[in-house]
Length: 131
Image 1: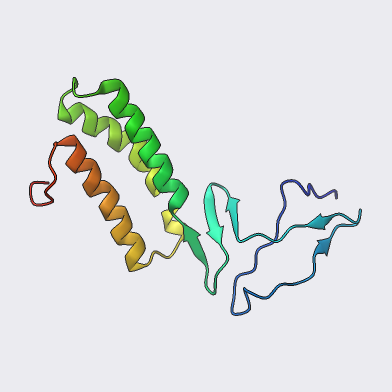
Image 2: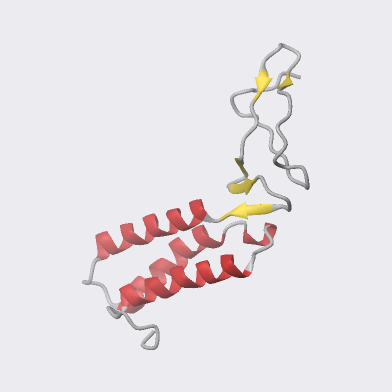
């Protein structure tokens, strides 16, 4: 079986995750690179002591899709329509693959912050109490 080296990489998870090791060579003599973060089925897994996922790209994709909706609909559409668009198009982008990851308290607060900021922008307020 031929290994596609352009799409393959190595990542170490565990107590000795920061040790540098020798390159793994294929039967053709091509080295598979070691990385600190990899993408597998749309989830970004990072090198750490325990299994950990990165939410940075999911948050970036949420902001990109939400801003695209705000850019095209603007303030013309009613809040209900905008809310429906965001919940059907943008929230799945944000929560995709979360059940595969163990979320820390900081990850949860980061996700809450994103949703709260969206509501602040939608309802044109800077107070979380209004939201």
